[in-house]
Each structure stands twice: as structure tokens, then as C-alpha cells.
Image (tube, rainbow, N blue to C red; front, top):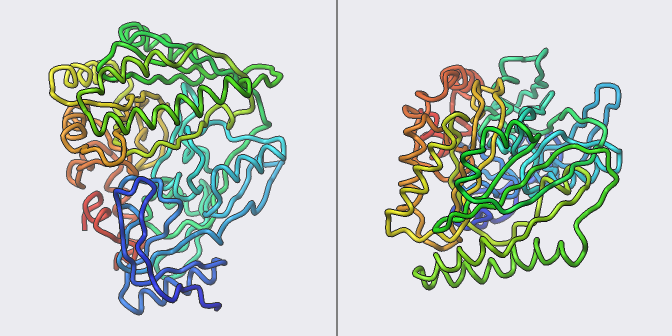
Length: 439
């Protein structure tokens, strides 16, 4: 085996900068066999192992003081099967690279989140999702995966082969093994028309069920300290592509949503009293627009302003009540919130630890600019969401432990029993997994 270990380990930080780790060793295996060797050596040395992607989780899910496995070399498109309509990608392949490759083949994922910087293994292992009336998370689009377990065994999992592992490992939290390849269902590339439109908070919440029912993909952002929202409706169309104009698109996506917003966030962090006024200005800055393009160019947008985030999934029928409670809490508190609140939906799926497992769900995501104290705000939001049987996103900040999570996940015991079988010595454990899954 080639030497896949870095000679010296350096401090690892996630994208938001709120999680750091100093592993004893760093490995960059280029093949599945090399990875199996890394796992055996770590086990023999009594070190824990965690794979890491691009660090877009806000939790310490990938942190370790043992062996940090970088998946950069386990990347690339392995196969495109036009008969089965699937694509297989190495674990370290970024969603950006995957989508570009699919577009060249005239193919597309059905749904995805709003950024594409994550690796396919990192995104799916933490339950990354977009918004959809009928189409679910990225993990729900998995048709097979390759998993290397603690003893170096390579499992090829699907609904027909190792179905119990497949049922859980699509959102596996890095607790069951190291995912080395993911096979996704794909379809012929299609066009989406996006319609972005300002709307009042009262109208969005009163018409929420109708807006979700009438659109394939609906989401909105509420600007705290205001009664204003920005909505986005994505629906399939015949085309042709009619992307946002070069100048107008740059103004909306770069100048307003990133450049000026970055300045506003910096001012708000330095002078919190200015935040309500800045929020009123920001909420009125974005105008209505309509554009058409292939899916990933509509679903995703650049996110250059760094932040920390908490997101909870609640039963979809509870979404409006939960959001109204959140708004009332902000209005009666001394909190100053300079980041919009994002609301999305997803249909129920059959993945054990998916936040939409067994129930139609709505997602309420709250953010604060990086470096801003967030605990008071996030604690208050978490109290509201858990009152509606909320489930926290596995890759975003929360304080839930295994006892509380078991109460909102009917198949929680199924997952932990599988973990006991595949990783009895907890090679893949860390402090985060000990908290959310128990010992």
C-alpha cells in the first residue's frame, strides 16, 4: 500500500470556522484497498477514524483526535448507466463536479439543496436536502452505495443487497463505516422556471399550504424584524433556457445577496442596534424576477457570506404555527437577528435517520453571521421547534442527545442496533456521535 498518511497533522477547521480538530494523523487514500488498510492500521493503534469532505457541516460530526481521512482522491464519476438511469460517483466528488458531469451527459438529479460545494458522501451522510412537494432529499435519490466497515469489509448496498444497511447508511452520520461511492437515480436533463417574488409574512403563512401544493419546489425567506419575505417557486417547463441577465443576475446574486449583504452583516455584528433598520432595507432590495435554466443552475446559488446555522424539521402541518411562534419570540425579545429565516418542505421518505423519515416535513433554518454570538437565539428557536416534535439537521448546530432523538425517530433503535453490529468497537466514534447516538 502506498503511504497515504501525512507526515504531520495540522488543525482542521470546518467551513464556518466554529469547529476545529487536531487529528493525530491525516490519511488520503486513493483506493478502497488503501482505505481498508488505513482502517486496519488505525484500529491496531487504538485510534478512532473520521472521514471528512469539504467541512460544510456546522456540527463536529467529522472532528477527531485520531485519524482524519480526506476523501479528495476517492473522487470522480465511476459509471453512467443509461439503462438503469443511474450515475455512480466516488465519495469525495463534489456536487458541483457531479452536476457538471451530468449536464455534459444530458442528465440531472431530480432535486438538490441550494449549494453544491459539499462532497456526495458528506451531503448524503448528514441528510442534505432542498425543497420539494414530491421529490425528496439527495439521500432519497440514492440507489446503491459502497461502504467500508470497521474491519475493512467492503459492502455494496442497495434495496436488494444488504437492504438493512442500505436503509440506514443513506443517512449514516459516518457512524456505520466510510462511504466510498454513491449511486444516484438520474433522469434526462430538464428545465426549471424560477419565479422569485417579494411577499408579506402574513400572506405567505396564510397561503402556505396552497403555495406548497401548487408548486413543485417552493421556499421562502423571512427577514426578522420585518413583515417581509422573499419567495421562490421552481417548476418544470418546456424551455428553452432563459437565464437571468448577466448584469441583473450579478446585481442580485453577487452584489446584493453577497457583497452588500456581507457589509450589512459586518455592520450589524459591530452595531446590533442597527440590525432592524438594515433588515428593512435588505428585505426591500431584492426585486421580483423570473428565469429558466437546467436544474442545478436554478436550485443552487453562490453563498459567500459565512454563517452558522441551526435547522429543524417539523411535521409539515405544524410549519406555520412554528414559524409564527418564532416571529413572536423575536419580536418580544432583545435579540437582533440579521440573517433571514429559510423555510422549505420535503415529502416523507423511508430512511431511518432522515429528518423526513415517515412524515411530510417542513424545515425552518435560522442563521447568524459568523462571529456573532448565537446561543441565545438558537436556544430559543430550538425550544420552539422541539415543542413541535422537531428533528434537528444532523449537520447543523443543535443540543439534542440520544434520549431526545430516540423519542422523535421511530426507527432510531434500528439504526443503533446496526451500528452495534457493524462497528462494535466504535472505530468511527467521536464526541458528536456519542451524544446523538449514545454509547
